[in-house]
Image (cartoon, rainbow, N blue to C red; front, side, top):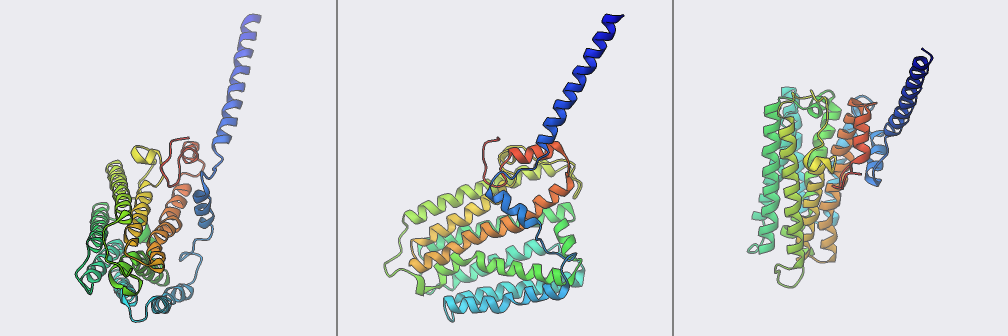
Length: 343
């Protein structure tokens, strides 16, 4: 009997020790540690997000409308009377129309596809506005940019049609000022994202004096673009397959297979790669000042995706899986953007 009691006491002590060790490990896992500077920056940005719950409609209307004169002034500074002002006016104008339609039908389901259609149309207009016979570089760079727009636009449109709703769009329609701000911001996104194309095709002031031939800039840049395009397409396909059986907003877990095992947002990484690659590809035909303008596309793509799309998704996932040890463990082991071996 004494032996039995001692065995029971030893077993209880061992169980207590194991529970204590598990708690220590669990507390360690529950520490949500940024995996990089990018992760820390997006996490800091979450606290400063503005939406209809913390910012008034008047403020949003001001932030929206101020973008129009700012765009025109910057365009005038770059090249007075040039294509930049035309591209910006068309982009923002199309999105003001989109805003009016969204209010009329009380839905923003056309938000993404409006951006891609507008971008595609302005790039086509940019190409047809080239004053001389288009060079090989102009044909290739404009062509791959349009391919990206069409692929992403069709994918996003198919996604919203098949899934029926999108939490981002449901949120936008809840405030007129907030909604207007989002639509005009997307118009500004189109304008800034296309800087490398506008500079290459329509700004003679920033072109080199020598004849344009395909060079190391073109081959290197287009190779980077192709890798980025492949990453984005594969990541989108993998997540689509994973989401196939999950209703919209019915997510109970998170994707961590394929490219998503090495990055929490590989699709965004691929898109940023593409625009940096395209910026580089245009540079061989441009002056020093033109090269700086072209790089706006790559830099803006990274800034926009990290501090809007990526940040909003991270904030939503953190809220949904708050306190989940497995999820925080996944975050601590997995790069937020750049694909990297699991830690």
